[in-house]
Image 1 (cartoon, rainbow, N blue to C red):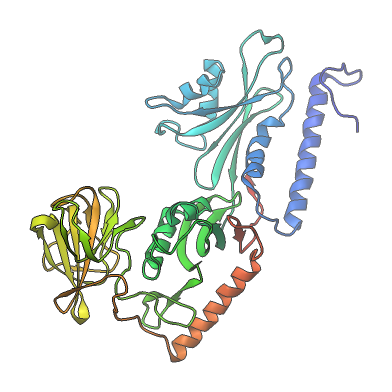
Image 2: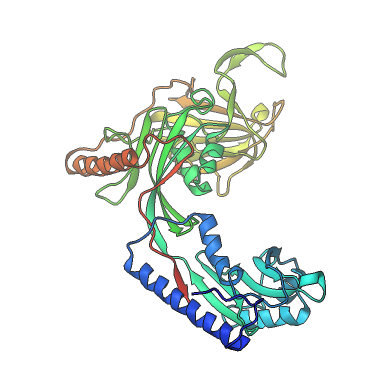
Length: 452
């Protein structure tokens, strides 16, 4: 069929009829494509560029606007105190067109109570010859994690409203990366959100000294649950199922009593009795033993280890226990002491302030924020002084022999091994030979749904 060109004169049909026939043909093609998509098997996930193209197809491929050039996409963000109508007008279209566009959008969304920063794209066509006002050809905006709305102008000048909704699926992600900077920064770069990263840091703090053990280029792997849109946008993350770095592996497992814990590959609980590092992203600046005191100027015993960290950095409880002291204590400044089982105690000094609810008698759990790094007392700058006491005597936190975690057995061990086997297979199958900093998806996405 010869393609209709609005610049050519028609001889046997009126221009309006010819345009109408073209519209009918387009609808027929669209119906056929929709039917084909329904019969076809699920496709692989679309990338963000592809989903953006779908969102804008309604107006970037709309009927030619007589007397206007090709539409250009104009990104707009609503400014503080601005109405949606004013924001649309700021895209370069006349006020009456902006008003009509907002009135049409109001059929599908609240156009009054909008927030500053809301973003949308407007397709604007300039008149040929640059004379006269611009014309709004289309508009696209996201109204939810998986929902968007488009406006497109039809041949008769009306604005057509379409709602587009991406399918949401549950999946497990296999993410690989290399250490560049801190573990937190490295994991964030490959798609893990702050909750997942914090969980990973907390796990490794039992077994890994972040300052001494991790080096640039060390590879790590994570497996975590997430809810994701077809375009790959994560809208919710679930549990960290597996983590590995420098040969240390953690597997999430729910025990028979309902407790969720992490175990190593042998079924041993990786939750050590005490954390090796009670503050994230910190470097060790002073070890246990004799040293020249930085303020007093003479040699004396340093009965703990120091971690350099910025003022206000959270200090984590090294283990479950009860707060014995939370007070000012001479050169230690603000000081917290926690009593654990087995005759162990931990101490935290030079704190800027105490954590919420931290007072003598308070029960705390491992990893709970007990205080924040500061420089109170005899201190030359912000840092954490950390001590371990065993039966009333200070011991070196590095290499201190503390109790280990529990070991699975019987039916629980069998169930754990089955779950471990599934995770191991997933990790092997999802791009084991890929370069670092790549994401592998455990499932494919269903096709995009378009509501008209």
